[in-house]
Image (cartoon, rainbow, N blue to C red):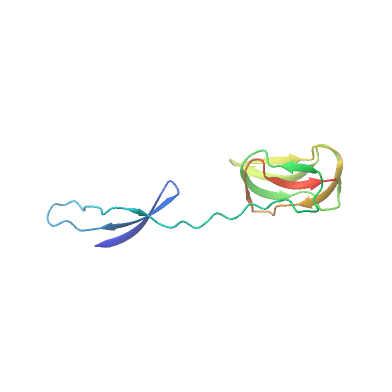
Amino acid sequence: MKNYTITVNGNVYDVTVEEGAGSGAAPVAAAAPAVKAPAAPVKKASAGAGSIKVEAGAAGKVLKINANVGQAVKKGDTVVTIESMKMEIPMVAPSDGTVASIDVAAGDSVEAGTVLATLN
């Protein structure tokens, strides 16, 4: 018997394979799902954050933080750049304001709608 760990579509399975006696085929024992590590928690806006949210328009990875806390930004200025489906997508300020918080770091994975930063 041999034990293997197999991943199919993100699901992890532990399987045991028995060598067949002359049949040429190896029957597979029942596969039981393995315990999967929990996903990293998505960062939330801090309590002292501003009232204007800059949210991710698509799921992706934070490529670059373009603004700093305390920096004044105009409507349309890029605050954070995310990478999604091999494209760089600027997440822009929805209105004029001052950056109150940056709620992600470069390299973080984000879902659509995740708060990336807030403005006052």
